[in-house]
Each structure stands twice: as structure tokens, then as C-alpha cells.
Length: 266
Image (cartoon, rainbow, N blue to C red; front, side, top):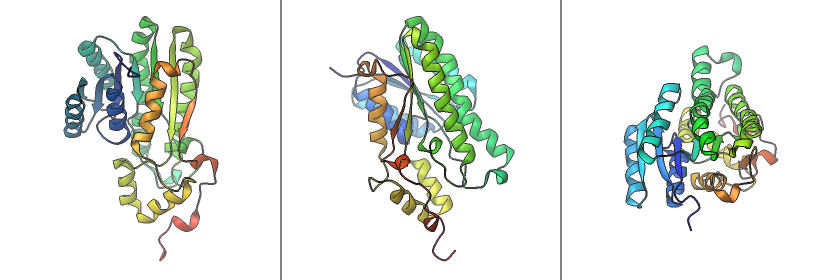
């Protein structure tokens, strides 16, 4: 029997990258999927791929920096599928590569709204339904960045660290309602977001990423998706309040490799 049969999952940032892999993996395990994203064409393509596999899916435009959009996404999922079992707070932006004192207020505000406040709004609007059902699994996407430092990414690390703290707190607070709350900390994963980081900062960053991971490569979105499926499933019924590191050993080794962060002719 599939691990998520008859469950309904809401996934933010589900049109591309890790979010799309989670959506497809959960659909393959029997879940109905509601995807929220700002990439409308990619969202429609993901829904079409899921439906072609025989599962059910819907897409709704959702800017997670806007709490009303997240509320509407959750309400649309319940209207379409009749329930809510799983929430994956996945959407994020990568803003960094500069010392924190050079970051603008606008950059900070956008990062916090998209990467952190979105988790608050997702949980705020999902929890009443899960508490009423006396069942639910919330998965918050953290990051290896919240465990180990890297020059230029203070704000991003701060948001991801806060997500892990919120996750632990909610696991304690809502366990009595049989609502489990966990986070996942990916290492560097081959996603469009990270491709943009390389495009912005240079190919030397991609080379550094590989050497940072003891396993000798960066990760695949499907590997993070498998972790999310496990945490969402009843097999993880006694698992709450954890941060699952899917990072190729990145956080187990020193991360800063200064000779690789500048081109050879710098």
C-alpha cells in the first residue's frame, strides 16, 4: 500500500526544484496535491505531470510573502479535496552573497517575508484544520545554512535557524493534538534557485559546493523529497520536533573553503 494513500498535501513553492519533487513523490505515494507558487506555467506543468500519473492535483498562484495568498491556498485545497493532512512550507528565495552590513532593508524584508513569515502564515492557517481532525504533519524547509556558517549569508541563515526553533516549539505545543511538526535541512541541491546563485556569483561557487560535501557531489531534489514523504507518512508517527539533515555530510565537516570562493585571477 502506498504510504500517503487518501492524504491531502499542500506544498508551497511546488512548481520547481525541491517543491516539485516533493509534490511528485507524494502524489506517487497516493496523496492529492495542492501546489502554490508564483511560477504559473511551471505550476500548471507540474499539475499536468501529476495528473498524467493518475493522481489528483491543483495549482493556485500563491506569493508566500502574502499571508492572504497562503490562507487562500489552504482553503482551496480543502474545498477541492475535503481535508488537509500535510503542509510543506517549502517556498524560499536565496538572497545573500554579501556581508550583512551591505544588505539593504528591502532585501532583508523580502527574505524574511518569503522564507520565515511564510512559515508562520502556513502554520497559522493549517493548524486549526489539523487540530480539528486530531491529525496532521507539518514539514518546514530549513537548511544546512542554519547549522554552519558561510560568508555572506547571515540573513538567510537567520531565517532558517528561526524555522528550526519554531518547528521544535510547535512540535511540543501541538503534539497533544496528534499534529507532528518537523523540518528538513538540505545541503546544496541541484535546483533552479541554486543555479541562479551560480549564475550570479560564478562557476567557482559550484566547484566549492561539491568539495564541501563529503559524499563528493551536491544533492538531488528527489533525495529531499524522499525524506519529506517519510516525515509525512504514518511510518513517522512517533517522529516530531526533529530537523532531518539531508546534506551529504556537509554539516559534519568544515564548510568554509576560502581558496574556492574567488576566481583564480581575483
